[in-house]
Amino acid sequence: LNKKYCWRNNDILIRNWIRHNRSKIINNNIALIEWDVLITQKLPELKVEGLIAKNVHKPGSNWYWFRESNKLGPIQKYKMGISPFSVLFMNQKCIDIWISHEFDPIFSCDIFCELRLPTVMRSKNIDVFSYPMSKNFAAKTELSFEPGIYHPIKKNIHNNAGLTSQYG
Image (cartoon, rainbow, N blue to C red; front, side, top):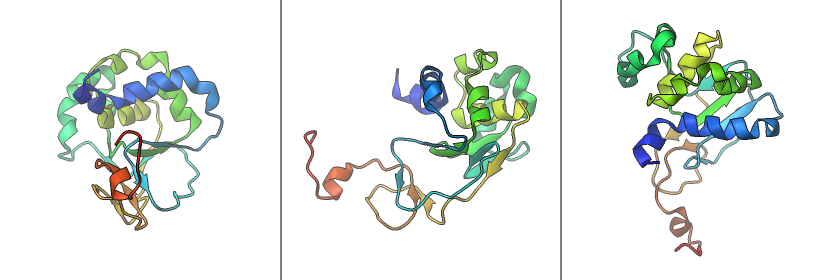
């Protein structure tokens, strides 16, 4: 797999993992957090009814990824976007829809994940909500302990924190 494919289609990679590990997801409220996110605050306590992201992009907005809507096929009329994909909350119903074989054809296409996943949810009458999550939800390249949610953290954090690692 190449980096660009994985970045655009990480919902497929996560979906495949969930399919093989579905029985391990026992709670109804699920937080999905990508590997390069630094969280230095308590996550919000939410009763999750649907899919929750920091930002929701609705049809009619000029969100960049809507230009891929034609790839959505029969569910194009439900198009919806979220961003960033890095921190999401959902419930078990969303998980079951996400891994449903009904959507295998759409998850076999190269469609940006922030467009595909919320569109799938909306096509099944799942609400997609925005929630601010943090006053500091931003891109950051330096290690910080100021309360917030930071994505992406791309520099070698071990060096910034004065830690040593067997990996250098």
